[in-house]
Length: 173
Image 1 (spheres, rainbow, N blue to C red):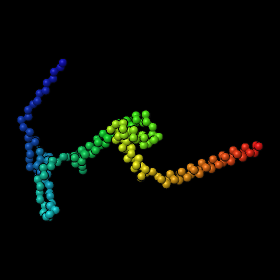
Image 2 (cartoon, rainbow, N blue to C red):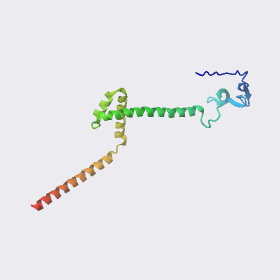
Image 3 (cartoon, rainbow, N blue to C red):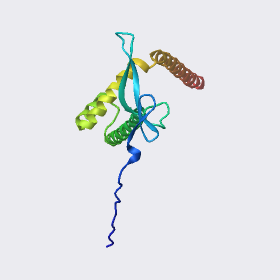
Image 4 (cartoon, rainbow, N blue to C red):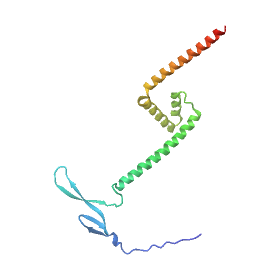
């Protein structure tokens, strides 16, 4: 087994970390501004007050603050986590579908609710989406048009087939 050793060299002082006054109300480390004074205008009176707000200046973030960038990254991460959770739930739903029929929607949802707590949340989501789709997205006028068209075409085909069948049989007699 190989041993390794690390030597840490002490630094006598950090002169580049000493705070130095830097221009108009800022404090700096070396030549880089770190803290800024913020002007605050009170809504109660119209005078401007200088506040010594010790906010560190962070270069290189453009228009967005580091917090805004972090929030965006967390938002993307939370989306990733949510997708992983939903994917796992969908895998569970696909397994459930292999053994349960969708022919009776209420029976399917009732069985899904009773399978486990994770399945119950899937069932609740299905009920929510089913209701929303029925109320907001289903095209009821299109259903009426298609149902009438299907009935008319079916009736015409059945009557035509009957007439052809009966007229052909009677002409042979």
